[in-house]
Length: 434
Image (tube, rainbow, N blue to C red):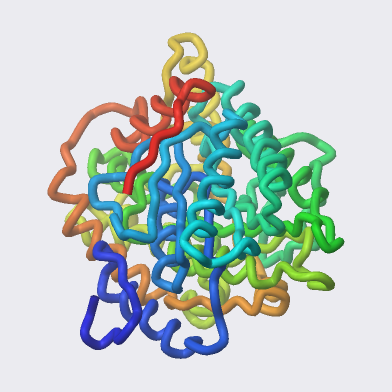
């Protein structure tokens, strides 16, 4: 713990920027905020889940249980208030026992029978690279298991991690609010099986919200393009492609999108729990949180390819803007070929229709609803967070980078987790570790 942080706990893997944000927030809200005594985080070893677990402890949680199909990474925070439990979200007994035992363990420590508890449901099969049946099993059936387990264990609050992709219909999202986006379910279908099954899970979760005394209060919170230290999907895959000379600017490179620092998203998930009370406008609603107006020029967006190029140059890779741009018509044609070859040879190409679409379209949001109903304000501004992330990747990712010539497959860490999820769903026993 830093001497300047007084009683604020700080995760040992935090950067200085993350520590400063944690200390600042806890100092400014010492007497006005709290977190539940018992916190269960499904998907708690993922990029977002891991930071959420840490921030709950930093903000005073007595017991935080991380429930995930994979064990925690070697550098995970092994604090006495954290329990890492290996289990499968598609196994109802595993998640029910996890919640029940977490509540009972705190009750046995003398806090009484009425335990303040919340479940943050982050577990999901993410991205376009899983076998299709797994999406349904994890994202939909897994969510049904969480709902039923919360009811059985008398947990009255669930904060669900969602995604804006549940509302993408292929058209630009140029500063829309949540209510201006298409309602679920999308009438003309979904661009990904991931998005479809996430939407199915979100719909049933939000429809379960019940403001009676013993009812279940629910809210869904989504980020857009999460980044930060320890990111194992977004930046690693793009930097790997750039380092191998396989990445170019898609289209004209002027598409606007918004980013969300991992700490800002974890913060949004945490404060969403406090917005779950009888009569709250947040109950049963969907919200998007981002870095907001801390983006360049006080806008709520950035120019994607310009910002990405900063990270690429920082790794001493060739600037994308010094190379030829690839027109969209060519990229969509190549993506179609790659998808056809992928089906024939049963392999994964990084170039596909969805990736071309999202890397060329406008994707940014007006977060006024989260600011109003959740009292959300970013705790790390974009410029500070992005610069800090670049430094982290230069120090931690770059030394382990090795050039390859392949356009097939994902970064090794991303593929490892996909393999575990695809091979383990429905068969993983529950194990505990501290």
